[in-house]
Amino acid sequence: MTDCIYLDNNATTKIDEEVIGAMMPYLTIYYGNPSSMHSFGGQVAKAVQKAREQVAALLGAEHSEIIFTSCGTEGDNAAICAALTAQPDKHHIITTEVEHSAVLNFCKHLEKQGYSVTYLGVDSQGRLDLGEVQAALTGNTALVTMMYANNETGVIFPVEEVGKLAKEYGALFHVDAVQAVGKVPMDMSKSSIDLLTLSGHKLHAPKGVGALYARKGINFPAFMIGGHQERGRRGGTENVPGIIALGKACELAQSHLENLSHERQLRDYLETSLLTLISDTVVNGTTEERLANTTNIAFKYVEGEGILSSLNQYGICASAGSACTSGSMEPSHVLKAMGLPNSVLQGSIRFSLSRYTTQEEINRVIEIVPDIISHLRSITPRIEDETTSSPTKEQEKANLIQQILEEEVKPFLAQDGGDIDLYDIEGDLVKVVLKGACDACPSSTATLKLAIEARLKDRVDPELTVIAV
Ligand SMILES: Cc1ncc(COP(=O)(O)O)c(C=O)c1O
Image: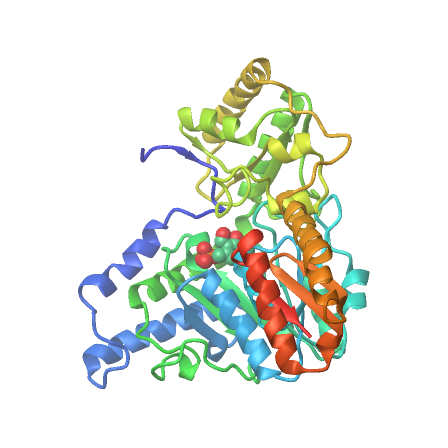
């Protein structure tokens, strides 16, 4: 299928024709290596430099502050690593529960390495509480990392205010702006942001290229260690065609920033029409601080998967939950963090528009969706909100770990006069404080840790990690 009504632009975007035109010669004619000493490579190095300036211009940054990467995930991981490596004495990170997995899963990984991470929640509108950010900051906080705009709801966080708070506590501030760049004007020269990630395929450049902004003066140890490329901050021969494409895409995005009313008007028309025509329909996330191209609508009492597959039959592409989690029946972690009821969690669909979306396409969607919803509501059992919430998989896992620690490990330790003073279960990480006979000897603590870990891995989940002190 090549011809569809594409309303899934937060997942990826169509490559702009001008972008293709700019990059093609670097796939065919100008294939030199920018590191080469000869002029065939030198002209490519000049083109890469121009692209760097185009990216910098969109961000209001200096060209030396731009590091090319392979994608948003790499940018997020590299920025977080750099911030932590630059401050080896600090071990605390603040992030939010609604991040993309590129940040969320990396933070979970860092917890296993011994970092402590605070995951800030959001309210039912997907908004962050600045008071909670302030309360979480300490002198030990190395980094605050959060998204500019949410990929599922489009809700925009007050990043400048968060950055100012982070500064007060001497913490670095990284922003995952993968969804925001090209949709929100930015000026790093006046910003409180230290590190910022963007990804080419979200702004009409190809997949496989991205960029990271690192404020001048920030110690940025290399994430990928190799050659001297990117001023020694990211080794490896550059993805030249991708970089040229990204530069052009940023130039085009900059000129389009003034025309975002196109997406906004179509999005508002789509949203208002669907809410008016279909009963039991709500918008997820605040409609105040929100990306112009995104609407996340809950069609209550039906399954999102059913809606998507019906839309697909009409050639309409949308999304239920983020692209990386769709395919599983688990409701979106973003909507769950907003504390929304089951009926809303199940039937939520994200429509994300672009500058290519037309009025005719939106009219067609408005024509089709009410029929789809009324048909699905007539043939499927109504999804009700639970009065008492059943435990999630995470809760079930935590309950089993608790049971094993209480009923098996504690009696075992007690045989030698030992006990567990405290334990804490956070996802796949179990922290255990041993006491009594066990705390006298470090080697016996290490042996007990291995024994507890082996039992939990065997009985609960092989991914579990135990820290015992
Ligand atoms: C907010 C956000 N951050 C990071 C990423 C990851 O970007 P990439 O797909 O380029 O790795 C995405 C992709 O959907 C995203 O929406």
